[in-house]
Length: 471
Image (cartoon, rainbow, N blue to C red):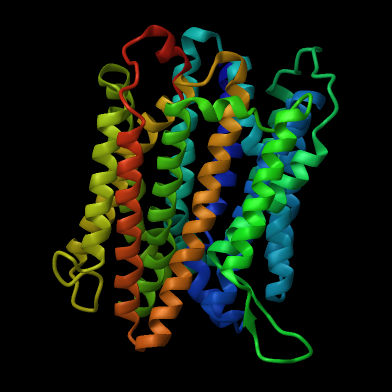
């Protein structure tokens, strides 16, 4: 097999492993609440910490790779991720597990920031679209197949297995990088790294997540007080203004602000953010519904959750092919519409929704709807984003695309769990809490539909676009 295909296999291995761990823990949350003696509000940070660390480090590692070499950073990513997985598997308490998940997140950000760039360098223009399209499918597969794979592992080997299974994969991936991935060309960006921008970006993202889900603080053993959202909003706005000022003046900015002046680029990224906010509610809450309300075993719950990735595998290739011919806007609109209808169905807008009386067929149909929405939306939307980026800025564009995706997952997880916990405490009815969370997610999906419409008609059917497509 030609070396370039080994490169694709290596990058796909790292990307799948990193994205899989974004969702594989979701199916273990009910188990972790019992084993670690914590409630959902505490255990959710096992998911959020991982996604948050990835989100904060994607742009910095993408920039560092330009300066010190993508192969070097990518190989370190495998080692760091494997170390974090090993520590997760040994975790005796929640604090240890959270720290280990942060280490995992650092390794995952090294992998995610470099995958598309390594493939772009390995494949000629005529084959690049096919290779990048394969990588896009791997991202989708990793994000949505976590609950199904995790359910099988937990039932067979216990919750620690969802982390320890990464050890042989990570070691093999590292060896493959050393053997097959091309060394970078000697040209390097000589400008100093934008450390100020990197730190500001991390603090800004942390502030945004805190704004979505304000923390509670206790002084000298007093009652817990939730930090004011107004205060956090002022802080985030100030940090955002400072970040823009720094990035507009620095010689080699972490984020090229000129990309944000491209209408298709920013509106499609906004639509992507909102869809991941909406659909993350399904991946984090449905395992709880299946296990706590319907009393499914983790393996059975995971089997039901496979309806999402299986539907994506059927729909996404067709959607990606059509986006080259008819453009991305109509497909993105259709995907967000289907997603909104599916979420409203789960919320009980068209019947009982998720409840103790729902049939197995209805559950599968609801999950298939979310899979269809993801398959219809993601490939064409990514196509629109990357086709709008100038060739010399593809690396920055792909890093920002991944950042937006992970920020949406973090935000959606925080909103869904916060809303669910609030409604359950207020009403004492878990089913009602599920309905509220899914209805809110449906409203967010409507917002994604509006953003998809706002990006306007994109160019399609052009050979240049097909060669650079990330769909």
